[in-house]
Image (tube, rainbow, N blue to C red; front, top):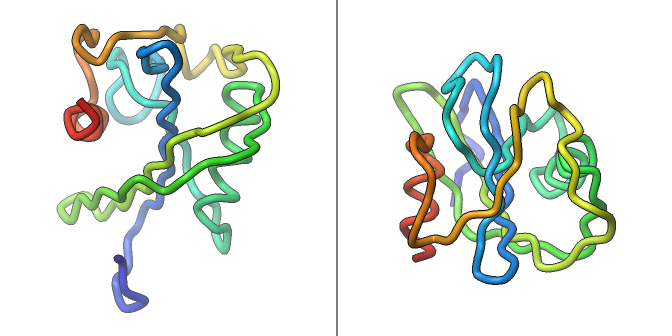
Length: 132
């Protein structure tokens, strides 16, 4: 686990949502990092916000859903970029998944873990390879 002495410039939270053996991915658009790449839905953790609270907020803002249950799968660290990314699997939610941020996400899509789109962000690819 991450120790209190470790400091990162950027704290992110990513959502793994699997339904009917397909994972939800977003096509990044007009973003600072990896525009034009497919990615797990990901957002920034705000200052003093807990990762799970950020997950709930980001899923509401980006996807229009309310998280009922989620579990922490892993976290990924990029020391070169000073980024930590907490990865949660969504177990249950309420609402209909919609692209709430079309200015940052060109589209949402469901993909088989055996047939993922390209290009895929490196961290999303790493997470999904671990699931497969």
